[in-house]
Length: 335
Ligand code: HPA
Ligand code: ZN
Image (cartoon, helix red, strand yellow):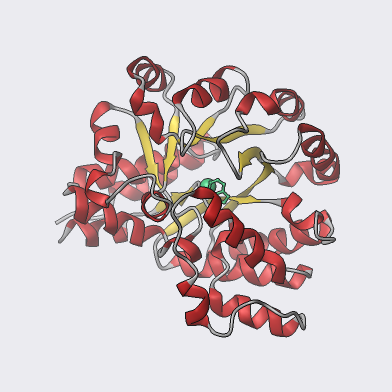
């Protein structure tokens, strides 16, 4: 069996997925029609042609514009259900999903509308195909910490269904230190903590995320490789890095897939995992991301097994749940 076939059959956990980034052009059109909205595109091809980015900000501008079609609870349900159905084929058995409530409340869509639709899909995915899910509330780092506190307040009635807070959007110029107090407040409420750092921002931002935010998991973390003491620390602390290869390529974090640092990360002993970030915008879901790095970096079956194992080990599942998923990986034949 090829490495790619083996990877496709392995159970996996998705730990870095922005649900708004799973909005495919076809659904964007359908929701615009349903909600009687104008969108600045004439066709699906027109939309896809606009998906050429030279950095994170160029992507974010299109991403925030795209999600304007999400208005009702049903829209958020359909978006989430479509994603969960899609990744069943990729053997994603557990997903920890980001959402950006401030991107919705800022345009008049209530927090409760967005979260209700997403959580109803979570419940249905468990009932229909046994997939487990967790929700991560992301603060937009280009907004103020005060705004993040207001969002945490809106989340208060939902805290039993939210696992963690995260930090996303425009990284450079918005360091983790800007959000020290709100992350402390989230921790006091029993939430886990994650943050995007070292995607475009320098290694110092990763150090801030570790020291000031006290993160449990690091999103991206590519630029940690520029600082060997930081790499040693991440290995020592067994920090999980949720790496997104197709995203890195599309946002020019790497020049080409052959220069992607994933294999180097694994060989150094970093606990790296693979995820899809914003699959509708970056050209692929979980297995597309595996295939991209398997081909470009000549990954072995041992590498892909480590990646699948790391995805569960780095998740926020209980130890018992992790053990069950790791046992399921063992029974997949590699030959
Ligand atoms: N980086 C930062 N913010 C984001 C991303 C990303 O890749 N996707 C959605 N919001
Ligand atoms: Zn991301």
